[in-house]
Image (cartoon, rainbow, N blue to C red; front, top):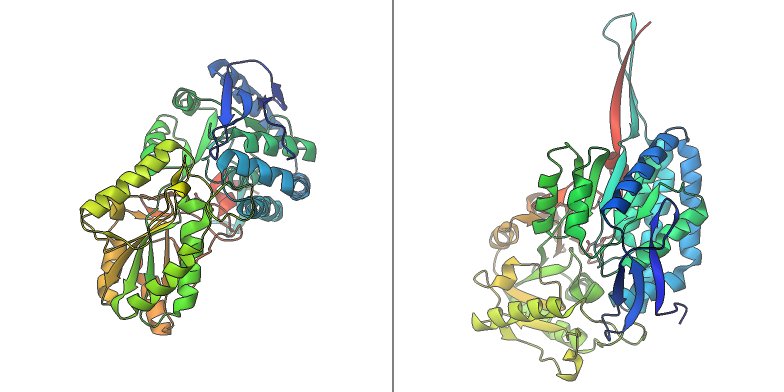
Length: 479
Ligand code: SIN
């Protein structure tokens, strides 16, 4: 093990360890053991962090995009150089299998590299003037101090995809990471400082009373932008907190992804895609396949292949590379998932694969397939966030499109078909912002990640990602 458990770590304010304040204990979800204690930031510390971020934002205005890009490239390299260590930390505090943690480090670093490139491409425009005596242009500049709130399910990647574009745009950033996974955030900030990021450009405030701290920060007009990844319920609450000071908000919220297998699909490849789209991080992703619609004509073959693959999954500690599914994040997460399963079974769903009791210990939950799921069940309408597949039959494209779209969220959707005309029709018709077409793995720093309807506002990554942190300034100059 490269990470020494039991040590005291610190929130990071003004580029330094914040070595006073109450301690927050961080536990390993796989066995409940103590990983570290972390010093927390209180309201006064938050005020100080805002003051520092404010001075830093002024300082960043004097830096060039090229300089910031160079810092980001160095940060990218340091993250990659520390891949094994960071992956171990992710697995320890979040639980996912070590091979997935290694992939998350690459994914997280990918955002830093992408925005190192984008930093130099924040172009304004030259506008044809309205009189011969004017020169009219528009310029892009950083929006100001950004408050970022990140979740536990991707303790590294959800941070870099916010901090990297913010810094590329010239903004200073205050991060409140999940209290369940603050270690990754702290390590990431230390690497950013090592890469040469300005001391006030990336501060980390850890707190186990996040509501109070965030409400306080959100009330400050010095903070010009909120970026949040998490549930739709909390996203709505935070959005209302932005109204008073007219903060801009990027919200990456919940999903309820349909995964549709049409009758012309290549069944083997659809099963492959579902294994990724469902079981990555034990189902704890907001783009996880939540409702699996399978055409009645191919259902028997699809289920036969799926059962074989699901039965071969091994559940256990993420540190052991033999295991495919780690623990769920907390007991509460597991009991919520179990309640959804119980409700589905009470309403007529049937369990296709029975889990063994041994694998169900602690926060571990064995993968499960539920058949005969329908819209009367809670599981159809809620994000499951657990390794449970729900199967729903359908007979026609029209019918399945209506079912897929009948939810109030629109993040990711997946479908498998070998009919080109159907692919075009379904791509147009699905009310979801990200589509996997004959593909179950869609995450990519170069693509715009985000949602429609109540799945949120704005996009992260891609060419759009940096725009969320830029103001447009219009200059009308008499010449
Ligand atoms: C999420 O679950 O919020 C993010 C998943 C991803 O970026 O792939």
